[in-house]
Structure formats: C-alpha cells, structure tokens
Length: 190
Length: 190
DNA sequence: GTAGTAGTATACCGATTGGTATATTGGTTG
DNA sequence: CAACCAATATACCAATCGGTATACTACTAC
Image (cartoon, rainbow over all chains, first blue to last red; front, side):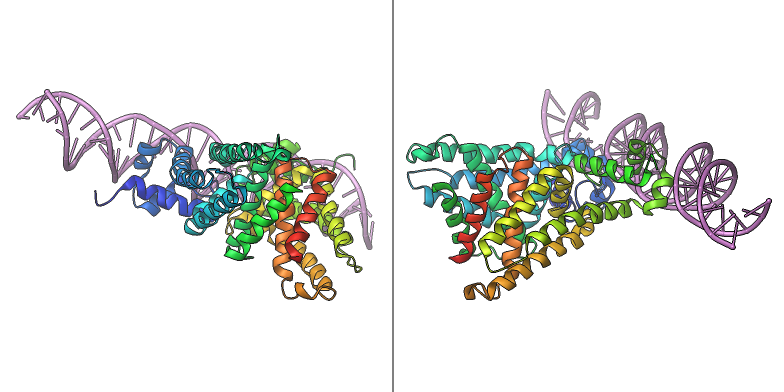
C-alpha cells in the first residue's frame, strides 16, 4: 500500500486540529489536505468526532505506554518521578503537535466535544499515576489517601511546563526537569 | 434602563462560551439566550469576534486591575507573591466561568481565533508580573535576567492550580495557597 | 415640530457545515 | 467465472453558519 488514506487522514487531521482547533477545522479541509474525498473519511471514521477519537486513541496510546513503562515503582520514588517526567517531556518534544492538541482539549470547556473526547485518555494517565502514588504510599506513610491529588498535581505541573515550552517561554531541558521534579517533591514531603 | 441588552449579551455569551467553547457556540444561540435578535448583537459588537474581544476586555480588565494592586513590590517578595496568588485564586473563585474560558483560550492552538483574542490580556498579565520580578531582582541578585521565565512560570503554576480546582481535583484553600507560593519560591531561590 | 440618531426587529443572503445516496472500481474468495 | 466486499468518487442534502439590507420606533437636540 503505497498510499494509506486512513493514516494520511489522521496525519493531516492532527496537524490541522493542533494548529487551529478541532471545532474550527472543517471535514472538507481535512479531506482536501489528505487528498481524498469525504466518503473516504466517513468510511474509516464514521464522523468527525470518530476521527478525533481515533486520532487520540492511536497517538495517545503511545503516550500512555511510555508513561506506563516509566511509572513502574520499585521503591525509589524520586527516581520514578524523574522517569515519568522525562517520559512526558520527551514525548512532548517528539510529538509537539499532538501534545499541543492534547493541552487544548485538556483545558477546553468540560461539555465541549473536544474535552469529552480526551477524557478517556486523561483518565488512563490519572489511573497510572494514582497507582504509582498508591504504591509509594506504602513506603511513605504521610502520603496516604492523597493519590488522586498527587496524580492530578503532577500531571498539571508537567502539562504547565510543556505548555510553556510549546509557547517558547521556557526550554524543556535537563535543568527544568530537575527543577520540576525537585519542586514537586518539595510539595509532597512537606 | 431596566434591560441592558448589551450587558445581557455579554453575560450569556460568557456562560455559553465557557461551557461549550467559543467556536462551538453560534451567534444565534447567544442572541436567543439573551432574548434579542442578531442585529442587536451586531450593533454593539460588530462581529462574533468583537463580542469575544469586548467580553475579554471587560472581565479581563477586572482581573488585571486586581493583579496590579496585588503586585506592587515594596521589598518583600514572598509577601507580594502571596498577595498575587491570592488575587488570582479569589478572582477565579468569584468568576469561575470567566476563568474557565480564559484557561481554554490560554492553551488553545496559537493560530485559533480564540487564542488570538486572549493574547492582549495574557500580555498585560505577563507585563505586570515581569515588572514585579524586575523590581525584585534589584534586591535578589541571583534573579537577574530571568523576569520573563519567572513571570510565565508563576502564571503557569497559578493557572494549573486554578484549572485543577475548576475540575474539582483540588481545593483553592489556604493550604494550597501556602503550598503553591512556597513551592514557587523554592524553585526561584535554588 | 422636525431632524437626527441609537436601538431593535423582520426577513433575507451566499457560503459552508457535517453527513449521505448512489455508483464504480479493484481485489479476494468460492 | 461469479459473487462479494472494501474503498473510493460524484453529486447531492437539509441545516446552519456569520453577517446584513431595510425599515420601524423612540428618544434627543435644536
């Protein structure tokens, strides 16, 4: 298959959604960018929303996998937090357009279609991080019963830094990585 | 004036934009919610974008004013940071719908209409906070030349916590306020 | 009183929206 | 070869989009 129309649609949809927003991009634009016609898109995805869902599931799956690998707790929480943050930062660097889309959907109005679509992906990340903190709480008694807040806060902090980096306010370098993890732990242990 | 159609339009536009997103809400919906017809809206605001601009200028002006009052530096940086953060938190609590809209536009794709519209308001906040850190740098030599990054990071941290609070992951209480300011300073001074 | 103006409604505009009915193609399977 | 099916295009749909031309009303200024 020299041309994979389905994959092409996803690629161009991602580019367009990330640069102008899901609502502002029309189905027509997507199919024109991908060099196909509408019935092709509706054959694969069923609807505009279906296209977004498929996009988030495919690309988001890679993110979840990377986080899952990084988040396996083996008794060293600072190390694990560093690995998780590294996973996010490097994913955001490699898939900056996708991460931009994720951020825009993350803070989109809760009853917007875009936010609804991203909810499952958010929940997966939240679950992974909650499990990490629940495990770690066995070794750090004072963390008990705060998994949810810790997970949300860590994800929030990471997303903030990635957002700032995407808008070129800061650089996702090692110094920032150190500062971020350090800062987060400082909030936890105290 | 028993009925102020202009003010009513702003109120209902804010509610709708904040709950479903600027792009997803039609002009027709706004005028129906406000109980008027389209020419009335176009009389006051000229365009859908003009309505958003006016909304952001009016409500955003109050935020900027509150931040400006809180951000006057008089030699005590921790105190000023606490006051600024308090200003944001209480504004977000009082105007939660508006702040929700702000956040969605903040991380919206850079070339989306919504993000363009919110840029001036973001710049005003950035300028205020940069000025604060520039002043403070006179007393804290090691802060020199990082105003921009400090301002962006502080705003990012505040917005993260407000975002988490709006999605009911955490509470914008005094404990969080203390932790947030403490955490941010820990990142600065080290 | 009359001229002007801000505010508002009715009725309309062309363009675009997300989505589809129908037909054709080309490969796979029996 | 025949039947089937996934994949694709042409051409179309009603509905909605942001925006406006026109006219009427009510108030203000002179």
